[in-house]
Image: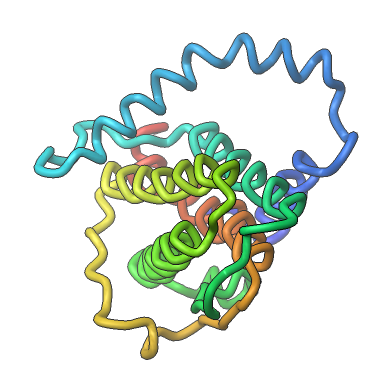
Amino acid sequence: MRSTKELRFQLVGNRRTYGPNREDPVRGYADTAMEFPRLLTLLLIVLEWTRPGLPSPLRPICDLRVLDHFTKEARDAEVAMKSCREGCSLSESVSVPQTRVDFDVWEKKNGLEKAHEVQSGLWLLQQALGLLRISVTNTALHSHLDNSIRNLLSINAVLRSLNIQEYTPPASAAGLEGTWRVSSATDLLQVHVNFLRGKVRLLLMDAQACQQDVS
């Protein structure tokens, strides 16, 4: 089990990865070129597992670079939305998950409670991004939003690969705890990014299936 200090360090380090002008571009391109074949293979496997009717995979997906790729695409969507000037508004306010992590509270939760919190958050984001996709008329944003929605489905496939019970969504978001409402597209996409690199990452880091896989 990782200590609170280690978890905070890893999350802060992950946030710095996405800061402006913080990376050596030459090294970044070289690392991307070296990792691309492996990452592409992992992504194709994840996408294959999202097909309906297929059984759970035999081995868990424990490589956090898959999540890092999804987080990067979420950040790309947020950046594209911030530069949009027309046809990029959200038609109504939507419920989204809280992204702030109280580490003392998080570490006291059991695996089922953590999984349920993450899965309900992913479901909320999927509903909200679906509404945003319908609301947006700027065609340049459509591919970003389509990618984001597909990636949420892929993350659910990753969770299934970790033997996490499939989530049964509620009839509405009204009764869900730990939510709030946003009315702007940029706020929604910022929540999306923060949720992936926060609670989703924490859940995958401590997944029991991955601990067994390493041992």
